[in-house]
Each structure stands twice: as structure tokens, then as C-alpha cells.
Image (cartoon, rainbow, N blue to C red; front, side):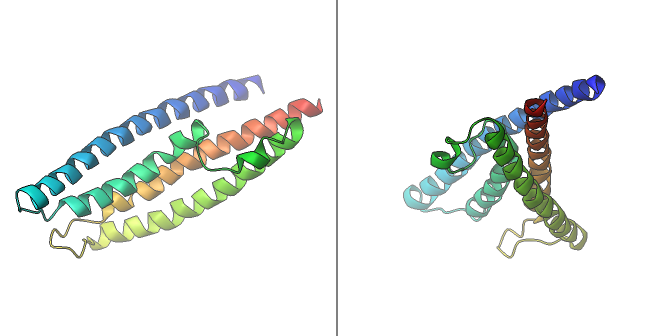
Length: 172
């Protein structure tokens, strides 16, 4: 049992590290998106030379940012929750509620992995492209859904197991 706990701690530390790295990458994507939007604003309103690519490019970046940052956001407990209710829970009740919330989130993310994976795979196989003038491939942005949701699944599973372990510890 102690060996399993040691492995669990190593896996959890890796998830924390990896999620933090994805959070940093997401920050870089925000800067790239700001530059693309700035280029579009300057090009359109100052130089009278709008681009064909910046709006679609920023939409793809938003998808990547949203899904890649999900695990990090969950790790630092910044996802939306009803704090005015959650603060009233203590001890065993809080652990049970947190384990339940993590389980529901895990199920939701598992569906995202499954359906997002099907969609991304279909886009890859059929070489699906956007219907804009740029005709960019859809796969790179669509594959962010199952990748980000997979990592969020692992974080939620880890949180669920930590809360269950805390419940067991309280019962002893």
C-alpha cells in the first residue's frame, strides 16, 4: 500500500508539473493571439489592409487555450464553483462533496475525450479544412479538445482519489 501511495505522489507531482507547463504555454498563446489581433486592428483601421488569417487564427488559439489551461485551472482551484455554499462544508462532508464534484467532472471530461477524439480523428482522416478563404486544417485545433480533456480527467481522478483517501483516513 505504501508503494502505491509513493507512486501516486510521483504521478501527482508529474501532473502538477505538466499542467503548469501547459498553463505557461497557454500564456504564450495569449500573447500570440494579442499580436494577431493587434496586427488585424492596425492593418484594418490604420493601413486599410485587413488580413485573411488573423480572425480564424485567433479562434483556433482560443480553443487551444481553453482546453490546454483546464487542468492547470483545476489544479489551482480556479474553476467556477458556488463558493457561498462550498465554504460551509467542513471535514467529511467537504471531502464527500469534493469527491462527488470531481467524479461528475471526470465523467464529463471522459465524454469530451471520447467525442472530441472521434471528431478530431474524422477531421484528420478526411483532411477536413475550414470553409474560409484560408482553408486551414481543422485537426490541430480539434485535437486540443481530447488532449486537454484527457489531462483534466487525470487531474480530476487524482482529486477524487485524494478526497476518498481523506474520507478513509477520517473513518480510521
